[in-house]
Length: 368
Image (cartoon, rainbow, N blue to C red; front, top):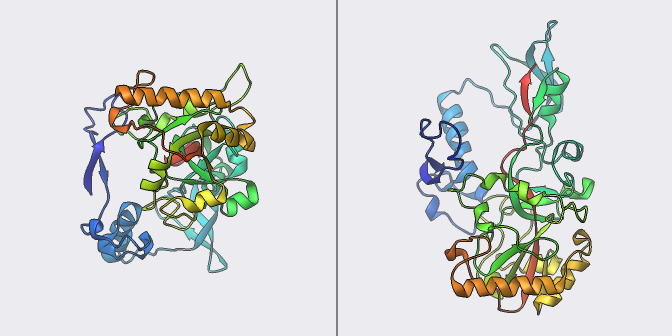
């Protein structure tokens, strides 16, 4: 592991005493020399990074080499928790190679199955705002809340089920979960705090310094979803869901707006091209010759609900470019290094939806 940036949440009680002052990134020594044309899962061990490096360190080197007596069961679906007459959990029933098996615990059973990101019913019941179609998740589509369900069936109580570490990310209509339930596939964005772009609500107004979403020194970046699901009482609508990333040809031609080194794209959950053109051809990214034309295309999108106003978006863009020229964001305090004018046609817009990004949606058991 190598040091990362400053840790989030410095306002937490006992932050200094806990010495939780830095984040860490998990890499093998050769990760910087990896073949960029290969997918993460195709890389040799020495080039592994992020979650795959963590897996190799814990499982391939940790368990398999140092504790070979421990049996690992991949492709094994846990189905229910086993209990004794008193109700204590003593094991788990699972499906392994097409057969039902019981695995008994000698000292206890640890239930660590992630969240409910791809479970429509649990999202509807637990998440703020438009919980089903208004959220997206760039983690594994196999996080369907099965473990939480098993805990409930065993008599567990839940706490903070609707809480999560979340901001706003890209979301696209692809994958099995979308085909079955209308749940979009989230994709990590590489352009959240990029120059030559800004984020607006459905009316065309900027509403926050978008760089806080990626700035690890800010204590609230993983609580940004509260901004995104804010309810507009006057219009009785969630006016920031979706939000829209507005950018120009300068950004489009210089980088992929989607992360291609981790998250959904490199693991084949969402098709993408580095020049962003596939998404444009699919209509996921809207394209127009003028800001006014772009506003009309946003307005025509079903999820905008005809909220977008061309004059408002044009005024927002002009004001943003004015602030870029001044070198200071007088409206929201966005950092100067992230500021860049949006003025080179064609112009683009892509949806940004509330996204459970780095930590699973929670369903914490408090008792069984």
